[in-house]
Image 1 (cartoon, one colour):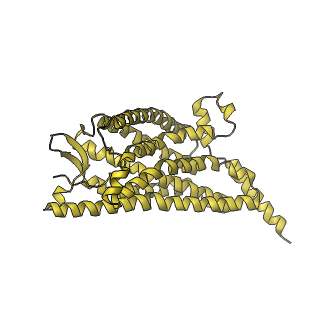
Image 2 (cartoon, helix red, strand yellow):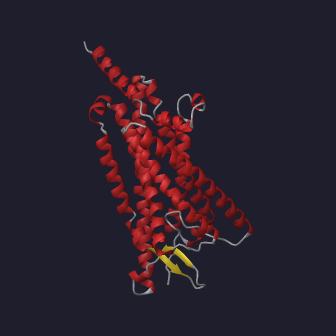
Length: 343
């Protein structure tokens, strides 16, 4: 017996309907996911190549490299999701891939926002205290923070790894979903376990995997805006454009799905019925975020028209390169301002 009364939390499972409108939406979503896969593999693959092999190791490049690795791994899961959608939710790839693919999906959800938050905090430190950043902001420290983030993500997604498995329905079709049959003796106990796990998972996803990181990002932006406006560092706003676009696109793409999954798991039956139609579009929008970042790196780089003359990899390299000269100028400007202010 498969107990699963809530809307899937990870956005990887689709809800299917048998109306004409639903089938049109279904075809549209498959096309969008296919485009997302192609663009995401090419774009993130190029970012991995540029940041991993063509650029000097800096705090910024390491962060964007790990973000691209997270998005690229998510792209690798999309063919399995697309085939499952085409098969009307049936899972054809066995027990191991059921767990592995969905673990990759959930890793991307957490790791992306954690890395974006870390980049925002790092940039905030550079703006607020450039002298300290120049002396203590090291690649080694950044690597340790990122490794700690990966470990935290693995701990957060552990429940998905435990409960996800393949189950067979009454028609003999296999699905990949959470199953609590082996964790409770009676159907009533299974329902209680299902509800408890769903609520805990939703709380972790919405609070730790979305709300708290976004609050940190907003605070960092507020502090940077105040410092930039007070000191008049016009050039300081330039490195923030890519980060601003990445953070904003993550919020736009992920907030609808986070809200829908939250309402779907804590709301009443009427609420769940009303929002079910939005599950698939919201999940597809969230997936599209993983192919946006490489495009943002290019289009928001300085002197974009001139970069189009060069290869795309050169454009990405220049857009992502950390401006060490700019940071040195900030230190000199701040030191000069301090000296001028002395009596």
